[in-house]
Structures are given as structure tokens and as C-alpha cells.
Length: 506
Ligand code: 6YU
Image (cartoon, rainbow, N blue to C red; front, side, top):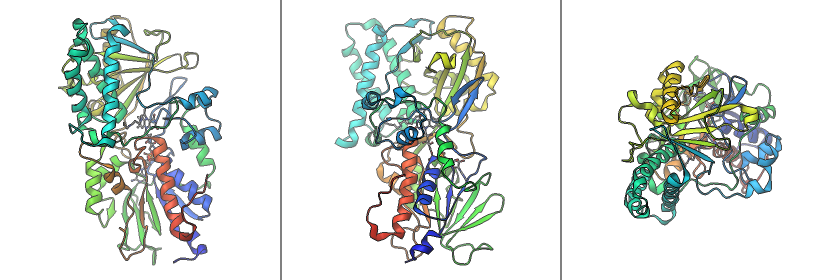
């Protein structure tokens, strides 16, 4: 066992300067480790937390909300400590709101024949959908899921229940089924998947929520990253150094390595010797580079879990308008395609009809601050295709779409900004979902350090953090942060085995 002094001199490299990497560095440095560095592929910190600009407005290109802003949520605690939230978001009242179902925004509904629909027509579809989504989450505890995917379950149940539940109002059944399809497309954005048919029904309820009504950062999510970075040594991050390969188990020696077990090789040819490496690159990146990112290659069960887990695309399209076409109180605009009654949450011809995958738009609030700005949401292969089009092409298609749905031939966004997470070379998509056939064990496999337990070589050479490695809060900022802290604590308790469970607080 290394002495306390030499353990604090261990060479630790963290790959990726997203919130999980920054969180890991914070904890290790607070504990006293002296040689901690972060290697980041791009020229910035924050990864999938990225605040941008649309004209004078701040917009979030990546993460938007603190999901479940209440005391148990570490992102909420940090945001409060750094004074980044408004009063309303920090209020006890806000923190106590239970959020088991979807966030209930104040909606407007527009149909493809250019009509505005009312809650009397759409309300029952919303209620049925919410009920079915709640049911979908219960199979994780009860087991015995009747169908393999959330999509198949919701679609089958909606088709079975709708005629009975809406028998008093047969004229609206088709419109309500079309609305359920819109809600399925919305759920694809929430889950970050192409179709809800790809999301496993049994594992869906593994995702847990904290209480609290989702809130945003008035000054931008990146303020959180800036504040966290201020607490770290100045030159801790080595920017613009994409890592090509992590050679572990002493399989490759660099000029400065004699005894250290890991050698990190960057694409620019630079190498860094390490005792421990914490990998925080997104699951999308691992999926694409799994055969070359580690040498020796990842063990088979880890490789299989990387393949099985889902990592999809959810993109945003911000639009600025001179005048709103929505109601004063409206927070969310739904688009209902009247011909989509067969509950297919994918489009048949991506190139021709990608735009039909946009389920709707959230309204950026408050109006006094943002003016009239909408955020459109689009997931899946349709979203990936949208990324390949020019901004002008996207703007033209959206203008046509809005004219069709509002029946107003003069509606015209004056500015547009969209995200392109699928083609981002170091994200390769947006976030993780539990794909059909996945279970919590796949997430545990992703998080398992190398070498595997029981090997005689030096332990904890490569550790794995990042949102995809967190069983209950995958796909979120707080899940990512918790995973970074978890791996830092793994290293800390490795060097202080007698201290029992480690409870340091940042
Ligand atoms: C949340 C939200 N939100 C919208 C959109 C996106 C995401 N999330 P990072 O990628 O940050 O860092 C890794 C770094 O590694 C990065 O800097 C790379 O450049 C670097 N790297 C990669 N390869 C490298 C190499 N070879 N060498 C060196 N460096 C390399 N989360 O809490 N609230 O509102 C949203 C949203 C469009 C894209 C989000 C949201 C997800 C978070 O952004 C994300 O999880 C974390 O930032 C990841 O941090 P990290 O450190 O792990 O990786 C029931 C059920 C369903 C479950 N789903 C529920 C939905 C919850 C998700 N929420 C919604 C979505 C929105 C709107």
C-alpha cells in the first residue's frame, strides 16, 4: 500500500472537462491530491452544458433545466451556493412541488389544418398519455413488463383504451390520437431517442426524480461551470488535446514513464503518464471509438453494455419573432398533425418530412427579458438529418411549418440558431437512454473500473464517470456531477481504506 504522502502525489488525469470531470477534480483537489489534470478535446469547459447567444438573448445550446431543484440535488445546492438562481426557484414552495410526471406547461395547440385547438378537445389526450407514462415507470419495481418497449406499451394501451374512454365524443378520437403521437415525439426528446419503441419498458422506471419544479439559470447554465472552475488551480485543464488512446496495464512506455501503469496518447502525439485516469467522455463517443479508445481493449461485458445502452439525439432550434403568434400565458406550443393517428413517432421519409418530427416549441420566459423567442425540439434520425442542412434551409422549412399550423401566411421568424449535437465530434449525440433489453447492470458495467477486480496488476488504473454511468439520474447534469464525485471518492477511499465510507462535502 502506498503511504499517504505518496498517494497524494499520484498522477491523476481526468479525460473530459464536462461537469463530471470538473466535479471529480474538485473533490480530489479538496482532498489534497497534488497532481490532478483534466485533458479536454475542445477549447472550452462545460461539455454538454453550453450557453450561447441569439441576438441579445442568452440561450442554452445544451442542458436547460435543473431537474428537481431541491436540497438533495447537488446541482441545485451548488447553484444556490454560487447565487445563480432567482428567488422563486430557491423558494421552499418551489422545492416541494412533486414532479413524478411530465412538467405541466401552460399549452397552446395548433393543428395541421391551421386551427387552434382547445383544452376540451386536447385535455383527454393529455390525461390518457400521462396515465400511460406513469404506468410505464412502474414495471421497474413490479417486473412482469407486458411488452419490450415504452413505445409499444403506450401505443397498444392508447389504442385499446381510447375508444372506450372517449366514447362520448367520437368525433374527436382521431384528433386526440394524433395528439398522443405528438406527445410520443415529445417523449422522444425527453428520453433522447429516435422512437419510444427503442426505450426499454422494464428499465424505464430506473430513472428517479427529485422534488422541485424544474428551473433555469437566469444568467446561463455555463455560470455554474465558470464558478466551479474558479475553485480549481489555474492551469489544471489541458485544452484542445483530444485523447486518442488510453494504454493501460503498462502496455506502452512513454519517455517519462518507467513505473506508472497508464499512458495517455493524444491525437497530436503528446503522451501523459498516469497512475489513474478518470474517463468522462460521453457514451456516444465511447460507442463510436470503443475499439480503439483503450488498449488493451475493453473487456467484453463492458463492450456489450456500451453497445446495448442507448445514446440518442435531441436538438433545439431557437427562433426569434417580431410579434408572438401564441397566447400571452402560453409556455408550450404543441403541433398536432391531423393525419398522424396511427401512432408512429417516426417519419417515413426523413429527407422529405424531417420537419414533422418537431413536436412543438417552448416559449422562453420572461418575455420582458427574452422578447419573443421560441425553442423548437426535435429528436432522432430526423434531428440528425436537420443538422446537415444549412441554417437558411432550416429557417425556410420552419417558416412554412408555422404558416401551415397558424394559418397565417405572414408568420416569419427573424433569427434562428440550432444545436448540432450528433455531429459534435466529442459528444456524438445528446444523452443516454435505457434501450430495449438494457438493465441497471449495463450501467454498472459502464462504471466498473479497470483492471477488473481480482487482477493482480495495479488497481484503479482506468475509472469511468459521466452521466451514462449513473443508475438513477443518467442523462442529467446532476447525474453527471454525482458520477464524477463517485469516482473521486473511489480513489480517495482506495488510499484511505480504514476511513470507512467517505463523507466529505464540497
Ligand atoms: C439536465 C437538462 N437537457 C439538452 C441537450 C443536451 C443535454 N442534458 P460532457 O459531455 O458534458 O463532458 C464530456 C467532455 O469530454 C466534453 O467536454 C468533451 O469535449 C470531452 N471529450 C470527449 N471526447 C474526448 C476525447 N477523446 N479527449 C478529450 N476529451 C474528450 N441535463 O440536467 N437538464 O435540461 C438537460 C439537455 C440538448 C445535449 C441535456 C440535460 C444532459 C446534460 O447536459 C448532460 O447529462 C451532462 O452535461 C453531461 O455531463 P458529462 O460530464 O457526463 O459529459 C424516465 C426517463 C427518462 C430519462 N431522461 C430524462 C430526461 C432528462 C434529460 N433532460 C433533458 C434535456 C435537456 C433539455
